[in-house]
Length: 130
Image 1 (tube, rainbow, N blue to C red):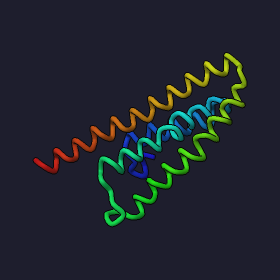
Image 2 (image 1 turned 90 degrees about the horizontal axis):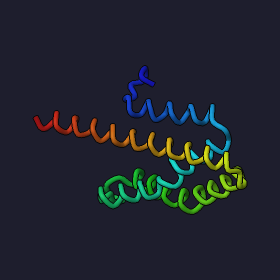
Image 3 (image 1 turned 30 degrees about the vertical axis):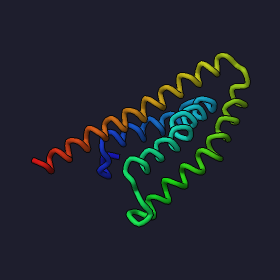
Image 4 (image 1 turned 90 degrees about the vertical axis):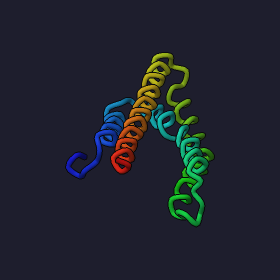
């Protein structure tokens, strides 16, 4: 990813995601995608819409993209992922523990992405102001 100019934060996040998808058990992958994506994206994208006050006139395609993800992830993908994960765990205590570990790692990876982007954006803004 560095060859294409991706920043360190994005590269680390994508690497974590790919490593999980390739190497983790099916129930751990399902947990990572549910708790690191499907269950957090609707609230995350809604907050962007609310905080940035993005109107259809300002950025129609971006607004539609965010709204569509909010709708699909909260109404379809999230509930389907929860159901799938419950079937994969099926009451197995070891799998449930692995699900917790995978979910926490996915959330930590996303937090690191956003924290690093926030810092990078702050540096960019301060460089422009100076």
